[in-house]
Image 1: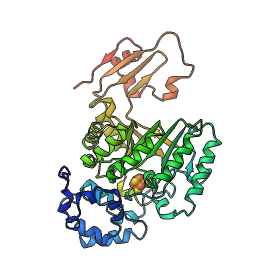
Image 2: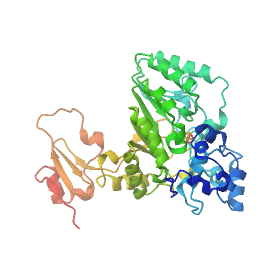
Image 3: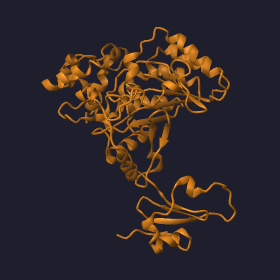
Image 4: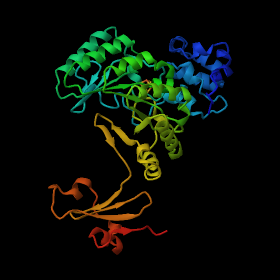
Length: 417
Ligand code: SF4
């Protein structure tokens, strides 16, 4: 992990040894010096001949762009550095994947006007920008980054706003992209101002990876603009505790101090954060900077990212270790964004073992089982056992102590150790 507490820490990299702290902390300098080619990258991170060749090959099919700030967090001595793995193009990106989909979330069929995804009843995703300060190698929307280069951005924004105005059921608008904060502030403000004037739009969410990859880009100018249009929620994206630096903390503090809740969405990424200890540490570090861990996403089936994907069981394993072992506020929801357009589906280890009309047998994080007794007066007409699918497993049907839990003669059963 790179220690960024010294404000000149980045000068250890020869390419930036003459950059002043004032320049480094200026988002305009960062954006003017984005690293976009393998040649420059190799002056920052030593790359083997094979890594260079693989990166060049991978970039025939995608774009490369990383902020100097994010690259300054790479530990050049560690080939498995989690920062490096998120930004270095590799040959895995052009190898055919198992189950790859061009439109992994089935968004095209839920796009009534350009840039707007209307899948859930009361909310829409408005892709207001098509660019990011950094192109994460695992990005679900990487095809948009390749395909789109709209000359009619403002006109398409108008179409999206019109659609929202004509749909009174939409109470929540998520401004994303790309990265919403890559828009010029005046353009972003115009969109937010127009949305705020629509009576049925209750909340606006702004989604940006700036706090993690370009924290100096969360300027007081942007924050002061956003705070005028409350309620605004800020959605961000940290994947590893090494990303939670003093600079990131300061950016999140500016947002939180302006009264905007900050929530984090992580993606489960093989070799990067697919470990319960890392995820627990990430949650704790985020809470310390007032960011609520909100979602852990199962990595989508986008083309070219199979090498980042983990099995679903890995997510269960992580959630099993988090639940009960740390505070509830540190627990994100683990979700699969269902391929083909099913939307986000929360998944978690099973804590309901059996459910009948009278009793629910549940287990805790240590395996202790308890029987909860329903009230005598029924307030639910559906068959809960059928609805939840938690019927008696054959092996438990033979266990007399367990059967006592099911019919309420016993309230608790501890596992044999
Ligand atoms: S910031 Fe988000 S949208 Fe942009 S490349 Fe990274 S994951 Fe994709």
